[in-house]
Length: 314
Length: 236
Image (cartoon, rainbow over all chains, first blue to last red; front, side, top):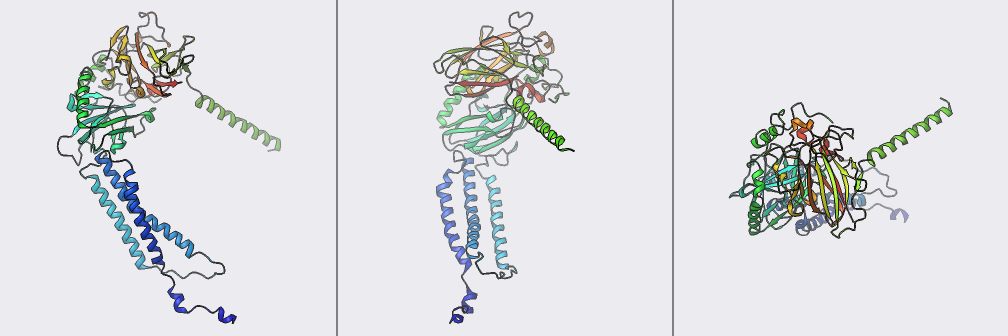
């Protein structure tokens, strides 16, 4: 009786076994669909940097796409890991070696093909997104590869330790510490610096552009909604880099017109003190500045503040 | 090495490490310029007035960097000039500021900061005369600025009118002594501003690239607390 009870199961049933692939695939498929739907519909609208501008909305869309593509991959790894731990774990009394592995061409080909498709499609998608009509939000250098149509509002961002100022050349060239932008219009940022390297980062606009002395770095975006804009310097620029932040405002076009006209009038006396609007402000080419430095006795630096023998090291 | 020698060596090494660590903590981390307290005895958020007095000098002969330009703050009790750029004011109060400008001129890198902002009436008084802006590119007229970006305060500091090349004509020993303009020429800047109701630390700085000897003048004293930048601590 005992011998009969311990007899092995029929060979056919043992060799067939459960369909592991299907047992992994079905929960993976269900969870992936649920996760992707949740990412796109629930989490997506709250992903940074929001949708205040065309650049920000584009970046949010990009992050959503990447999250939707990444979630199934991550779920597959986790489900496979969990399944292996449970189903293929070592059992008491089972001291046999596992079956020899000789590779599986079909699985290997599928894995390489799938991962290649994912990576290459993301490469194509990312490249396309850099030049789509909404702009990437990053500084494109002095010669942007993409420009919006029409007449965008030009705003020059001038960085200096440790504050950004903004110049509006289409409104008499006034300069202010307030960044105010109109909804519904493309903005053409010209980002530069008058001392060290900074980086203009308008978070809610999805705009981040390096501010280098002597360089005109252009970035475009279109403002979609009114609201507060957080502006930070994103390049370590000295003692008070961490305090180099400010807030800007996006407002309806009519309100912006009122503000800009008022600022142009209010700041007229200050505007007269400024050099003519230029894309960069190099002391060697701004005549007024050179003249002032000579008047101040700074004659040794060929238009620079201090002689070529400087700097001395601290 | 004998056991007593080894124990002695261990104890000496331990004491040396503790001593060096204590010196670093006390001297570099906890040390620093004094904080001049203008908030003591003043009830915050009542609009009370405090009078802060400072001066900017062409040098700092009381420091290890005698050729660095520097601000000094007057102690509110003793009236002595202190080598510091840290001061404390009450929240929700009016600050009447007096700054003696002893240093020569340097043009602003960005002349927009010749504009007076953030003061009561957006005005400063230079030797009693009101100014809303000073054009640093039209003459030898600005030495430094006193700027607190956190409250949009910016006040250009007028100079005695001596250009950089005749800097020896300026006050040569710090802290300079207001009193005899012929012996030590200077300008007196006065202005007022309201402190925020929110307590906190607000950094202040000079916007003139006055760090001579450093890349485009933005190093050295421009980056060092106790010289051309510091903190205004608002307390309640």
